Length: 586
Image 1: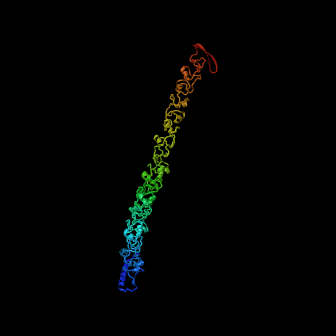
Image 2 (image 1 turned 45 degrees about the horizontal axis):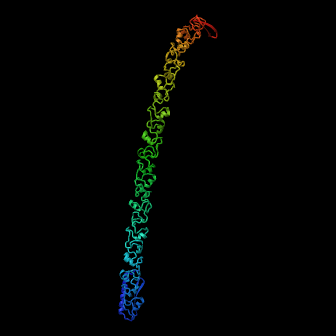
Image 3 (image 1 turned 135 degrees about the vertical axis):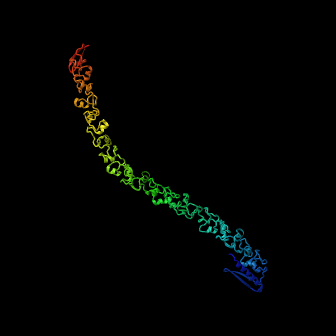
């Protein structure tokens, strides 16, 4: 137990009083008793003033000294600086200079160090008084010399300095490091090696207090909260933000109105206000329900911003007006209104005009023929992209308003000539055979080269249709060039007007009719077995069966022009079924 200064003073005063009493009281006095109280304990100074002798005047009679084992002739038997009587009165061993065996003599402890010479560890801190004085330089009367919350002995045990409150210099006293709520190593100013000294570290024994993947020191550098995984509350933990390059202390790094975590969910760039570069920031796009990662959400050829700000179209619908044409094509290709299904108001939606009709969706009358596209398609049946639907050389308007022809049929009368050509030739486009010659106008012009306005182009008294029927040339009076008109051959001579030699006898029809008395339709006029032409060549008469009257038909007569010849050879000839013996003479 530690001895206070007041208590020590009281003991000294009591001792002085006792000495005075010994000097003034008679020798016969038996007992003088003085007591000094100390916290409930009574230290008694007993003065035995009997007839016994105190040889050394140390406060003990010689008989007492014998009892205590002290030297009656030596006031300080143990040479510790305290008289034997005083030591006995203090409860010390007067024969042992270091009663408590702590390495300090009793007098020094009692009078100078204020330690308890009867207790080796006056302050009960686990260290002997001598250790504290000589080795550790601690206060042996104070169990916590540096007042850091740790007994000096405990500090020696764990290696801290009992004379310094903060051994490792981390601004956290050793007691707090050892016994605090968050314990740390009092010998290491950064117990968890996270870059923060223990005093500044919210959890000095945990390098990542919030378990976000960043050590606490790094979080302090970044300005993040080492006790909060997601410092800025944006849905991304601090480590993730450092990996992404976003600011872990700013929930919306790019200031686009979307928290960084939400941008991560959406796939947008949390460092770019307009991820897809379409002119709308990411937050606005989420409001509009457009894609913040695709510039043209509906893939219609227009960026979302252009649709919103310029064209006022729906950026989530490729075809805002549902006319069958994407907004981008309407704006960039056709110059139509993407907000109006029928830009030109002609009764047809733009998509139908472009995809089906091929008309101009910005013009009510695509071909400028005076009829609206709707009228041409729905009422007239004409082509709204052509002024001349049937391409017959006549405009639709002319055919519909000035002529009785069909504007949708190039050849109204189906005669082989387009209506425009018929007007050019002055034929009747409604009558297949304008001249009534039995030939339609088309074949007359395109095939026979006859005049569709004259029934008898060659004026041979055969109309053109009849000539074609007969095979004659309606543009030539004498088709076969035999000298007779086709008409005469057909009506008078019964010859073939397409053959100059009708009977193929070697004589043309004209010669047979006009120069010879032969029949132009019979190859062997006299039926003698020789064609008329051959008879003319041999000199026989083509109209006489036996030209030389030798009873031999010209056809089998070797010399039909000679009646008698010198016999030189006999031949048997087969005639018309009669055997004859004919003698020839050279």
